[in-house]
Image 1 (tube, rainbow, N blue to C red):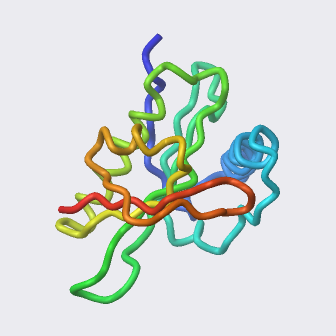
Image 2: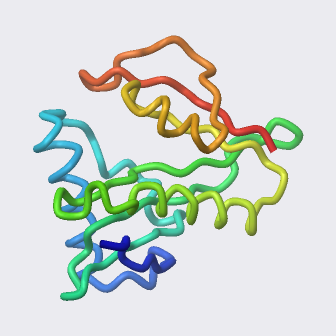
Length: 153
């Protein structure tokens, strides 16, 4: 089964239903499935470009957010995160498609800036397949081991 299509949406263009369903998916994956109570609403969503994948019924089944540059030139970097895929869409390539689309957005908006992400440790090989390289030792982020990874551009 092919991965669902992905649309790009500014925060202000999200419908209330989209926002509800987006936050529900993130909560389902990051808080419930991973047993990790953490502050998902961190104030960064309004400035982010959101990637949303919907199934044939219009339900949100995947998401990610692309973030503006962090820092000042020449050390500025960009990032994406909050990448979540509903259980029903795992192993369809949707996670990979969300990373590809995230990298495309970041390249279009901020060409040449390195991409730095905080990745769950178990996903190191997955992100490595896109060219990301580990920059830190594992660290605890609300009970889940993470590493910082960079894609040089």
